[in-house]
Image: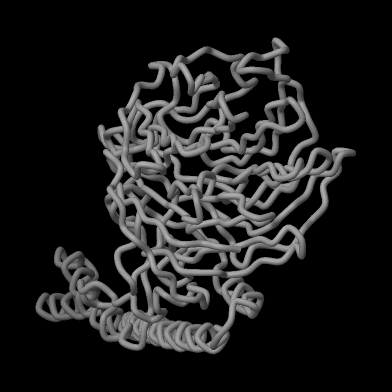
Length: 509
């Protein structure tokens, strides 16, 4: 009986001390069943993970494909643009400049550009990428992408060949200087020699002897570049500008007067605000100053001030505010033509002819600005949006502006690159809109004429090379240019070397 009870206990577990072990065994025996139940969930997670990886690989591949397609489309687009520009350039004759200007305008949409050097002897170094037919092969390489999609000469206008004679060079090379001609003497002022060196003197060329004479110093407080300048035939008024090297130093408002007979300097009431390269001219007994760049170099000014003057003296203590100009900016040409009227051809060259005042050319909206975050002793440049205009305006005796025929192409850096001859304005060189592909500055190598009788522009010749801020003069049938920054060569219009060259050519209108 006892054995039966033991057998029963072993079977039923009643009264057995091994019961807890049986319960543990039951748990261990049920575990495989639980794992089998959880296995489908594990498989689903693995499948989801694999699916997600596959989806990501698909999206990455698709994205890479889209990038490749974009590169190819960009290359094809730029190639077509180049072909359109080539077809748009007229085969002959300056009379067709309008089509050239329109074609250039279509492609020269000003964008941000990057550079890290001041535009002097060192070529501008833009970091914009350029697409071409091999971009797909080069995109993963460190090789420099070729910048040959668009010929650098595409902006040149058809012009007759001009024979130039090279004369004795100026004592020093200079960029962004200024000049005034009084009879046979040509006064060339200050300017940059290099990025880190500016001039503080005046060189004088005698057209009769064809020699450079003795130089003389400028006042220490006077600006060294980007000067406004005008003369009454004896006294030269020097207005505002930038003092010091590089392009980091702000402009000054100080103004001075030079007596060319005694070579003595006198102070003059300062401008209400300092300006870079303002257009300056004498008109009806008043010294007029217009436009220029504001203190940050980038913002164009439309301000117009005047002050009464006589024999090198100011007849008023303060400048008077006048009607603002239609477009502002530095590096322009001011010219006066008639006692009652006054033209403005943008890039702000202000000129006086037969009593009219002309503002010619259009230094762009904007200018190079130093990068305020650069810690280097040398200037690094922040990218800026720049626009160059070719507009021409006339200011009448009622102080109202009228728009005139535009320049053959937008032109800047011409504030001292002009002469008046036989009721015409002749302008040499300058800078035009940048290359649409490389985003690099393009210099101008043509000689322009504005006929004041017909109010029409003509391209009348070619310069020895493309050049900006050259100083122009005319004497005894000869047209002279000296100094400035020239191009890299016949096929490359980018600025490079600052020169002291002096050239002349026979010119009869």
